[in-house]
Image 1 (cartoon, rainbow, N blue to C red):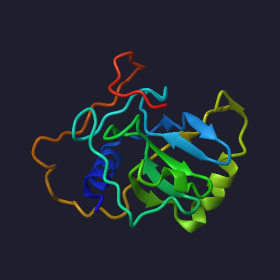
Image 2 (cartoon, rainbow, N blue to C red):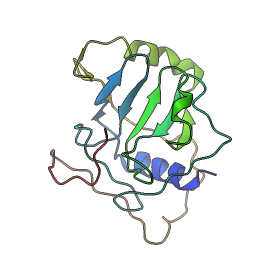
Image 3 (cartoon, rainbow, N blue to C red):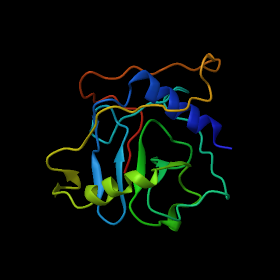
Image 4 (cartoon, one colour):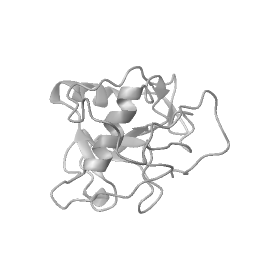
Length: 166
């Protein structure tokens, strides 16, 4: 089960944490990455604190376009950053918590994203995630788990980040 990862993602979506952030990294043929509210690729947080543990499952594989996984800087360093793959990437299995997939009708958007103009893997002009909407909330009406909280969304870029994503 990838319950903690899904809960983190859903709560951040509901809070507006992801609204208005940029896809700060696009690597054609590989993936696009977002989830850093400073859009630098160096920050992020979670409802569990600065980082939380991986939830790797042998049942889940990066076997097709549109799979959504947590970005990290190594074992157990998940924050709010996530990426979406453009093609099968089995080499990521066991290294990144896979927790979702892009619906079939939205895969055409991914195809367009990997063909945008880039400067050092940053889309030019920027690609913005306007609103992250939760359609089905399995935790609707339930309080956050004990010891968790919605992290503040920085208003400006900060040099005091919790995690560096490479």
